[in-house]
Length: 110
Image 1 (spheres, rainbow, N blue to C red):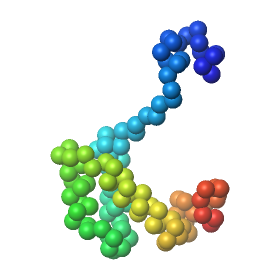
Image 2 (tube, helix red, strand yellow):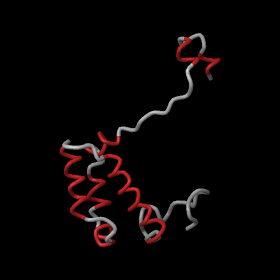
Image 3 (cartoon, rainbow, N blue to C red):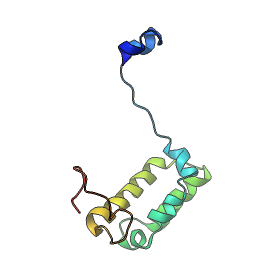
Image 4 (cartoon, helix red, strand yellow):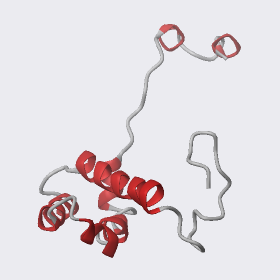
């Protein structure tokens, strides 16, 4: 691809190594994904599991959404842990949005 774009790109771009890019979780968690916290972390299952102190999770969400502190990585990890628990320990629920998806090579067979 670099060779095809050589006439259009400056040498600095063509010669640099591959770079990753960050995902703006903090911004998303304060905007369009704010309801993810109540839907996932505030669910009855997540609250009753007892893994995490609910008051601490609520404080993290409150501080993050109000802009007091950036807890995006902690909140992402909590959301992913809860979703993992639902999928691999609780199992898919009949009629849930994930129950009809085909098994992928990197996921548990359904």
